[in-house]
Length: 261
Image (cartoon, rainbow, N blue to C red):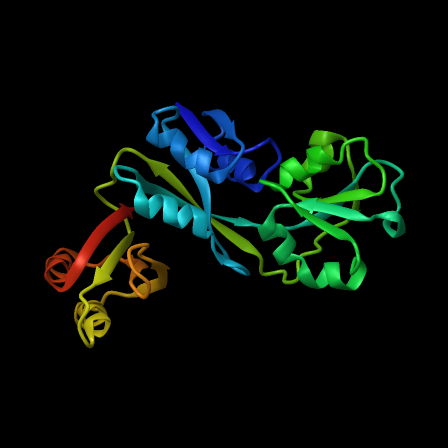
C-alpha cells in the first residue's frame, strides 16, 4: 500500500503519515496539488493532506482540490499538535540572520515572533517546512521555520523552539482514498443553495430539525459567477441522517458527500 504526502521527510505531513500508518510505503510530493493529483492518477492508494489549522483556518488549495475532484473520499481524520521552530546551520548567530524560509502557513503562525525578533529580514515562502530546512543546509546567516525533526534529518541546529504565536496550534489532516466508507461518526459534505431569499436558512434548518450537530461550516467561491458560493460542512452523524439527506437533496441546488469517517 502506497501513501502520498507533502514532502520531503520532516514535514508535519510526514509526521502525520507515520502517526496514521507506519507500515505503508510513503511517496513524497513537492506540492499539495501534486499530492492530491497522485491519488487521482492512481499513483498511490491513499494520501494524507492538511485540511485545517487552528490558527490559520482551512487550507484552501486542498479544500478546493477535494471539492473539484470526483471519486476520492475522506477515510480518516487525524489531529496533530504543531510546534514551530527556528533552525539554522551550525554556528549561525541569531543577530546575523537576514533571510528566513518556510511554508506560508508556518510564517503566518509565527507572525508575532517574527515581528518581535526579525522585523527587517526577508521572508521567503517555499512549498513545505521541510523544504525550507533543506534550503538552508550549509548556508550562513539564513534560517528556516520547521518541525523539530528537521534538525536531526538535515543536520541543523535548533536556535529557538515553540515559536508559534499560540500554543493551541493544531492541524487537522484527512486521509483520502478512492474507496468510500459506509460507516462512521462524522460526515463532510459540500452544497450550494438555490438563488432565492432565505435559501441558506432553509438548508441549515434541516439540520436543526433532525438534531444534527454541525461542527464546521465554511464557504468557498463556486468559481462560476461572482457572488455564488459552495458551503463545506462537517457534521456529527445521528440516526436521522438518511432522512435529512433526502430533504437536503430536494432543497439544495447541488450536494456532494466528501466522506464518512
